[in-house]
Image (cartoon, rainbow, N blue to C red):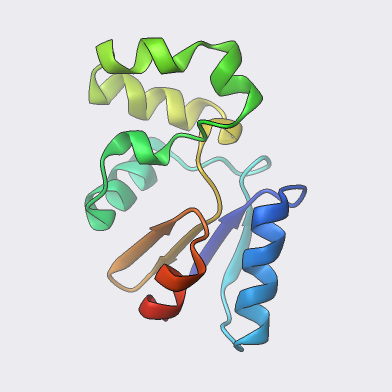
Length: 115
């Protein structure tokens, strides 16, 4: 499994603790240092079955600075993938990628059901 997060994010810290307490091992990846590529995002998006907008960190400063709430609806998927791949701080976190699944954001009940 791959655990993609931002070390200063409290939700990511909670998710990491939750995984550790359950003995779940995952490769750790700092989203700020190693941003997901467009190809990764496309694959994760397809595997998740979620709308692409769920991959955006809507509570982040950069999201607000770029006024993406108003801009995203008019953007193509291609433009959205490129934007997400341009800066890890735009991507919702944490992400947990496993064999045949992708979890976006930390919802304990969802993670418990999947793992």
